[in-house]
Length: 266
Image (tube, rainbow, N blue to C red; front, side, top):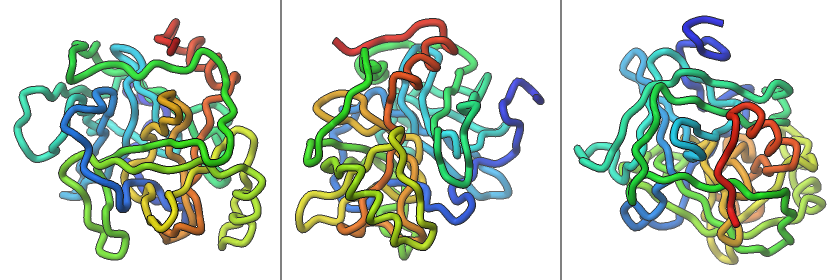
């Protein structure tokens, strides 16, 4: 371990082993500061910026995806709507520790969950607040309404990114259907019980795509999952749902044990 980073690296990667990391395709601009738990994590190296999303779950802890790699130059922004405007509501941090799940597999994306400890505690207010964890594991039925948000790619072909936070409405796709869909994809991803899938509403192409991996999936107003991966080199296909790490009992215990306590939904 170097400089208190786990693992140590000098780059934040968006594409690993052929998997497409995630951000928002379609959807709409979010109302400014309507999601005060959202975190933007970025690293600039050689004039190139790469990013991931996350959710604040405690004053000094974030939850994100394990396939996001963080280095000494990573900056964390809370309280943002626009990434280019000098918003007074923003709070900026460095990373003290990045702790991916000990069983994470970068090839299959199993256990794609990671805790981030900030170098100091955030000041909680109406612009920056925590997203409570569920008190227990929940299984959301197919067609349950969900939403997600992020700042990244809005046009996959042009790789156009968004300056402002965007959000998209999705519905849960049952794992049996999702398994069949992904078995026909190039990488034949395995959909496990620790994952859940969500796709766009009818006649929509809303999706997550490059740049927002680690952002939260909210279902029935509860923190349900973490943006993990999608089909190879494709976003916004209404026939292929995105895949999210599900907040299982095992993950919730790991989070509590690692952070020493947590905020929970009621």
